[in-house]
Image 1 (tube, rainbow, N blue to C red):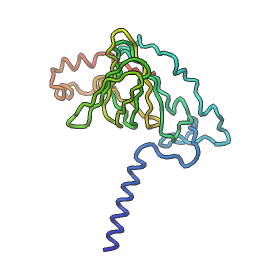
Image 2 (cartoon, one colour):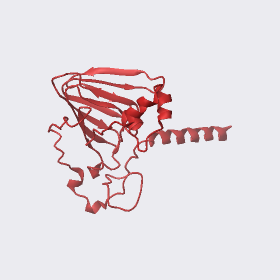
Image 3 (cartoon, helix red, strand yellow):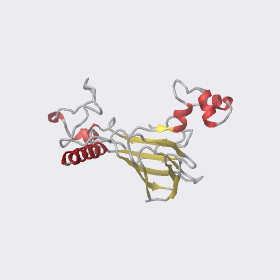
Image 4 (spheres, one colour):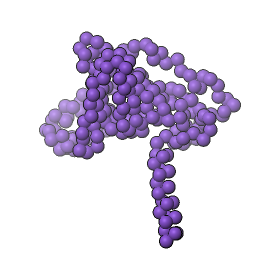
Length: 225
């Protein structure tokens, strides 16, 4: 009986440990600056020699105080992401940052971050934001004003929209991964290379194949710069 109890306890602890490390791994030293030139392939990046690390590995003159151009974007937004690719010192630290600029009536269209929870803070303007749960797909939405904060849970589809027709908006987002990833839903469904079969999409969306063909012929841009 005691042996069985110990076995159950061991399984429980193993599962609990798995849940703890199921996102970015925790560092085992003060830092692990990414060595992006190493030929060794790991989940993340190999550590740069600590003796070769300097303050610039933890610094980037990102000019995040400067407005970004939203006029070239078909969706009216510009996402400036600071992740481990731009800032090597973020490696293994499980965090990244983004500035998002929204044109009047611009949006950051429905998308997911497969590896990160996001917390968004509105710096200027007004945003209509929300996320959708897994099936049966309940929408949680809120109108945010300057200084407001909203959380988008990891992996869930979410969006932001500037409902004001004559004023831009700006937000800063923190994400719980050094490389959160982004899957823009419309781009993934209608702009994948090679394309998803129009038979599949016509059935899934319950529309004519001609409608799918038209959508797949559009230019699906990336608003992340």
